[in-house]
Image (cartoon, rainbow, N blue to C red; front, side):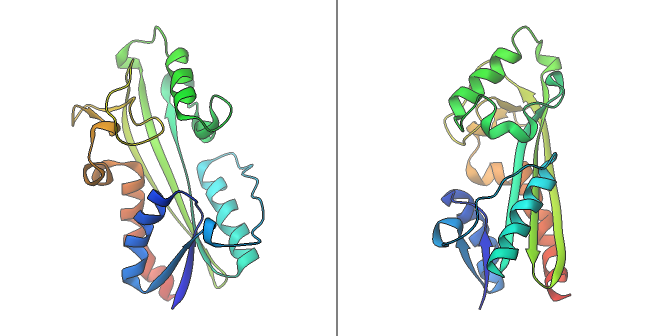
Length: 198
């Protein structure tokens, strides 16, 4: 059985990818199950570069297939910020502080100008193949206050007008159908088998 390393310690994210890879015959491991892996410095200028740095570094060190992702929020009124700094927009990785900073930065910006895009880049690397890169985007608006109790990160502020809900108001099933990560996983599903057989 071939092992694939999911470059995360987030069990929720790992569960999502287990559901994708285990039916294909892969044994799925996460960073918390591996030892002696290097500290990865994500110094890329794009989500794709950061995901590629993570995946390639871990494949080079471990010799196994790796899936890495980098995701974030890009707000038009903030010239694309927080962007690749989404997880640490307010300093340390702190969802409440990040949301508070985002709301401060958008103070006095009218709703119709609070457009934003959530983006995910997924990269799969292997010692025997060129990297597979897929991406997903979803457009929405940033609300003036949080709505909903589910999700994480900017989910309570990210509003989808077609559903009249924030990400934090959606069930996991609903969110996976429309989210940036859900779209990237759908693209992964479309291309992975052919890539793996090469």
